[in-house]
Length: 252
Image (cartoon, rainbow, N blue to C red):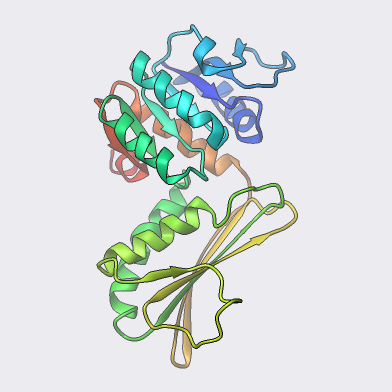
């Protein structure tokens, strides 16, 4: 039985994961952390990670960027592996994540779904063939109107996967409204849409002469991310210090 702390337990993802884990005999939530609590969870909830005194095999984090620094300090001190799912981290915070991974196991993935992580692999193959053939590359991501960061971490991960295949020779363009010039050949355009209750849509467009190829992923509920995070926690428990991602979970 894998014992986990749910960091951000009363958020939408925290509650989704709580429900999924309640039906899973291989894992249990032994404590939650959230600044706001109404006593509705079957496990103890602490207002900050520093005050949590419950032992666990891993932490699943779906909180906010502002809470990540204290989480990393806790996991490093207590030697508790961390599944870090919060997006919108600053460059300084990403550096702290890397530093923490030298002392404790950290799994960070821009998107926890199996489908997105398969898409990351497929895009490498597509980019290696289509980019040299002159296809332009654009990414359009869509999310609900409550999401505060843009572009999404997943959109950036898709762009990074493509750019890695292309020897990091492409630049990212987020806004063309201030520049009146034609599109540069080696750029990846990234556009963000916010509206309604869209869980998460990502389209990667390869636009060539007289033909367009689009790779699409649609998430219809947050459960797809929760299931991935749960599998990641099971995988990460007991692992040595290091930086992991969902490809490690998929590969076993």
